[in-house]
Image 1 (tube, rainbow, N blue to C red):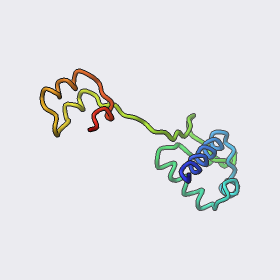
Image 2: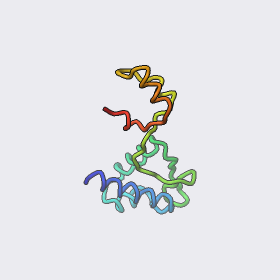
Image 3: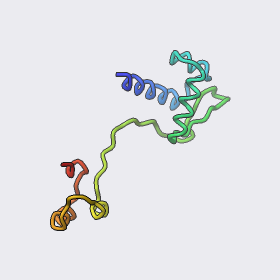
Image 4: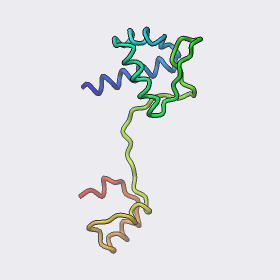
Length: 111
């Protein structure tokens, strides 16, 4: 439940940044019922994961340098033939050849 609340807060913050309507850090802290220091920590963490955030003094708001939005999601990976060549542990040459004939999702290979 706590994660879902945090996710909602990040989505709300992302929307305010995209609208360039965060206000200064103290105003933003009041909107989220937290401290300015917490706002600075959150913004710094978002920058660390690649969000192009900066503070625009003229607009008195955090903004994105580029169009885009924060996306929190689960991403599935597929195993390509090259990765299958590097598989080790319990796969015979015959079964490995059969695996190479198809593309599999990694969950298909779980025992």
